[in-house]
Length: 168
Image 1 (cartoon, rainbow, N blue to C red):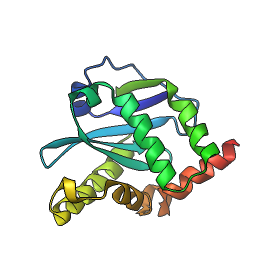
Image 2: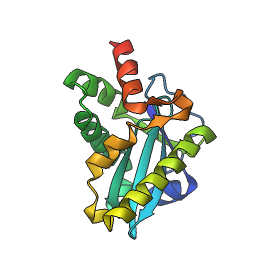
Image 3: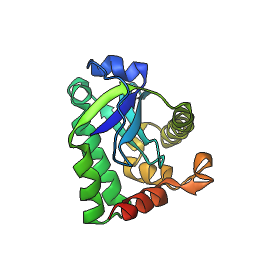
């Protein structure tokens, strides 16, 4: 089981009852999610607590938000595949996300990282002339190849690889 810790805005949109303090046993099992409004379109930004691995799920409609756990699985798979992870690593990561619980946010450091990423995303959308002109896959890849202070200026994509290798 994993926990997706949602901001108040996103919890309200999801409309599910949140669960109290879930402690996942899987190293990549704790994520934060935030609702962003880009070009009047709802988007969800997901960030892993341990590795700060992040990806944006753009253009969400009401059915997508109500089924956010499936959107999360699909976007995680796509992001990991495009970042060059092997089939076994992706399968290992996806095995753990079969059961998802939505909770409230608990880590201000992760929220700070997400705010920085949200600003970068907003500028990328602005520079491209709108959300429809942005290559989301390329942007997600760039987000995970930025130096992150809580990781001692390491890269998220490298940390995910290290965690997945330790599990095998």
